[in-house]
Image 1 (cartoon, rainbow, N blue to C red):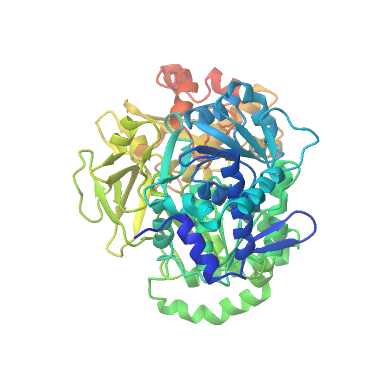
Image 2 (spheres, rainbow, N blue to C red):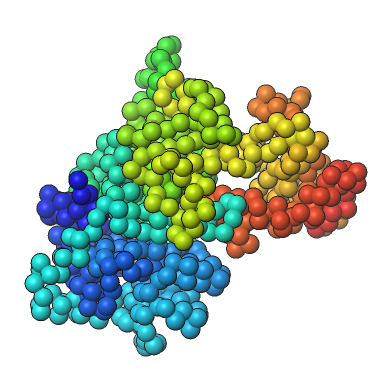
Length: 633
């Protein structure tokens, strides 16, 4: 049966013509746009693209902040038969943008006014690009640039001179296996790869996602993730579209920071029922809540912390466990909820039922915090190559630490190094099969053949399934560390625990490539070190202070070793014997962190190869070595 994104959209417009699909704030308030109004704009723009010369199978790029025109622009591309190459607004380096536009065979670009300068800087090196459609009115237009309004006018003329049947002939010719998007992943190990997703990949993943969460036409979400993310695509606006629900976007500021600052205000205005999040945002929200509570004084803070403990005890780690004696806490839970936590939730619009976290693993403490304040944050799992949703916790079934139950239908198995299926409970590579598995990597048959075998997608992620039907994801299968005796172990859980529980550590990456001991490169939390040193009358301005700071970091690392407060968390042999302190953090700018805030291990290993090698020398193994002391200067 034919189920393209166009079919999905047409069915929703027919079923929910007067429902609000999109909410956008460009001045004082959020303005609604109904499904019928969105369709009118999509038809006008789609016809304009046909008039401009866009042909079926042409690749178009979309570079813009989240807004109505992002969604309308993508849908209009499909009505012209084009393939969208969505681009991240975080791409600053000209070579990053150049690579995607040239490798993606892009012929047309849709761009917002604020992102236009990036395209202008490189357009002379892009002879294949025929037109650059600019969303926002400009004082003047350069060669090959065209105002969005002009494309709309061309669409009006096209629709006036052609029959509706003629205009829709392209859209109706799109089949399930036709390409919808080419999404470039900012991989953790190599150059970006173009993930080719078909129309059916998307509609299948919409159907699958809706088996995990029950959404109806009354629901609203505020999309705070960039729309080029697959996650934002499917769970942000396509599942909302399928159900006749409403998707709002964050008010775009004059700068990225201003846009970020609009998020809390917009959440209160939109009053969303759920929000998509990533760990970095979850931590920011938590910090803001705690700061607001502290500002109310010691009594409120003590009451908040006590109430949080009561609620966390009552709810436990899962809704699958019997409450037992905890049931007697119910009246106290209701009291604290009324006194404190309902007021916290008011800052999130008062109607927020849950967050869904993706991108990277959320630590259990973070999830426990949110269940305590009454806005659970459910861990999900997926990847672009799977369009992306594979599993998630949700209101019906959750267990902290897990990645939840699988979408339906999907075939998942856990395999060893040789691709042999492992029994329940054993750890190995997560391998899936389903209609959400990508068509392949764009112009990269070798990587496609490595990743998809007999219709199965080899995710490169490490995990296991339990008898409860829950998936546990434990890190990257391909980033496993190997000790000298051949034992393989995943570093991610250790790294996350250290960042979460060690106040002196901001970022950490473990390293072991068949060596006798594990090492780590650490980005220290300098603010914490400065505060702690000041209490002792020391500072980072001299060697004495820097040596003391190194001892503080060492003490934090030792918390996880024998005799430490967290000694039972990980086997001692997996923990770093020594570490190198770095002067610079891992950022998107230096390409050591990708757009989903995951470390790009290969880039870090390459950049600090000399420091890593040094740690395997007698001097480098010493805590107070000259390079560690210098890095804190």
